[in-house]
Amino acid sequence: MKAPVTDTENENDVLVDLNDVWVAYDGKWVLKSIYFKCYAGEIFGIVGPNGGGKTTLLNVILGLIRPEKGSVKLLGQSPCKRGRLEIGYLPQVSHADRSFPVSVLDVVLMGLYSRLGLFNRPDRNNKQVAMDLLSQVNMADHAKKPFSVLSGGQQQRVNIARALASKPKLLVLDEPSTGVDSVAQEDFYELLAKFRSEQGISTIMVSHDIGVITSHADRVACLNIQLHYHGEPDSCFTPEIQQSVFGKDMKVIVHDPRCVTCYHRHENHD
Image (cartoon, rainbow, N blue to C red; front, side, top):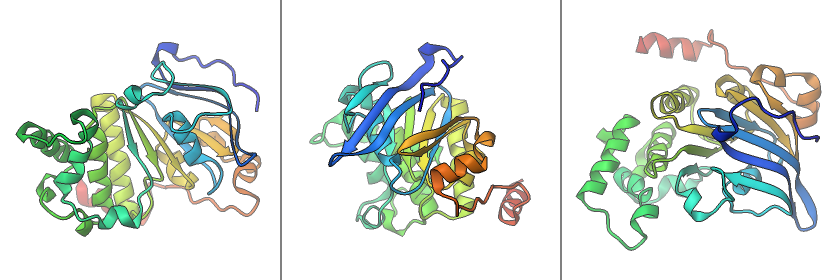
């Protein structure tokens, strides 16, 4: 893929900048010629099939994988441990994550360890910070509950509170909708919009669900080893792009405000 035309946004607002990035596993290219930018205040979605390189791309952004070719800038510098302190990362949720025997408050406190140091116990002030974060995601009443008894949507909110503990400029989310029902998904994406408007926190999130991502992202990248599209969400639904990314048999379900589930949800909340 050729390098895109230079973006019109202020270059000082670039949080992530990948320039002609290539990554290989066992002699096989899993990412090819990736040009990618995420700007401050942006919710950016990356969509693609399983095995298409989405998680690898996140690991490159975080500095956990070094590319064979190309350059990576995170917050204006090469990715490093210090830079990652300003990133809130949510990996894919696993069954082990859901059943780990800790309280909700303990999960959020884990997000403070990068600043406290692994062997320093959290004090009263740290616990108050964690409680304040739980309040932001409307989970303070659940602080003493075992994390494992929460629903998928509630666990997702707690994990967001944990990610916010590092006071990030950028949230990086890997398949955040996994195991979460449609109503909880809508609540979750409203939270992301709230953090963007109130705290200026940007988001990069990846998913195989093109319908969900395009409903909530400002810009979208369609990835299957290469970037087949990079721009406004509404323009990525062409048959050519869909077939290049997902194959000819893909079916798309697009979020619609007339959806019965969403209608009842907003009716109940208003």
